[in-house]
Length: 239
Image 1 (cartoon, helix red, strand yellow):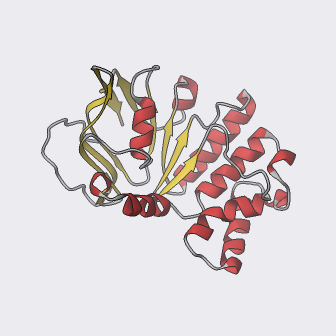
Image 2: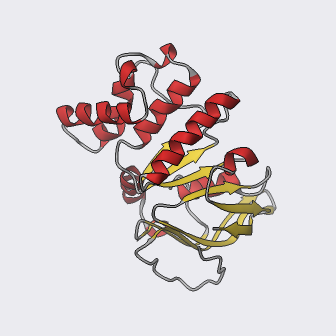
C-alpha cells in the first residue's frame, strides 16, 4: 500500500493490480468546481481484500466509478492490471473493463427474463466464448457460490441472498483481476449479509482481489485492509 500523493507517474510493480497516482476528479457546476476526488494515491496488491469507506460526500461513489472504469480522472494515472486506463479511448477502456473487472451491485442487476445459468453466461457472451464452454463454466460458478440447484430458475423465483450469489457468480465469469462490490449487502437482512460476506472471504482466501465500497463499518470489518475518504481526500489507509 502506497499513500504517496505526488504527481510523478510511476509504473506499478508486478504485485500491484490497482495503482492510483495523484488522481483528481473535478466537476464544474455553474460557477463552482466540485473536487470529488482531490489528489488520491494508493495501490492494492493482488490477492488482497480492501474496503473503501467514507461518509456521504466523501468521494466514495466517484472512487467506485473511477476504479470500475465507468469514469475517468480529470488528472493523474489509474493503473489496472498493468495498464494506465486513464489514457485509453472509450473502446479500449470498455474492453479492459470487461476483461479485468467483475461487478457486484447492491441491487443485483440480474436480467429478469434470463435463468440463473443464462445470467452467469452474459459476460462470457461479450467475450465471444463458445456456448458449450459458457454453459460449463456457468454451471461450475453456480456450484462455487452454492446455486447449482437453481440453474433453471428466474431471478424473481430467488431470495435476495440467492440473487446476490448469482450476481457474484456472474462477476466471476470473466475470471477478473479485481472483484469490485458496491454496497453488496445493502438490500439484504443481517443474517444473509453475513453469508454473502462469508462468500467474499472464501474468494479472497482462494486468491481473488476483492474491493468492497461501503458505508457500513460492520461490513467493512470483513476486509483485511481499509481506505477512508473524506472531502475527496485520502484520510487514512490501513493494511
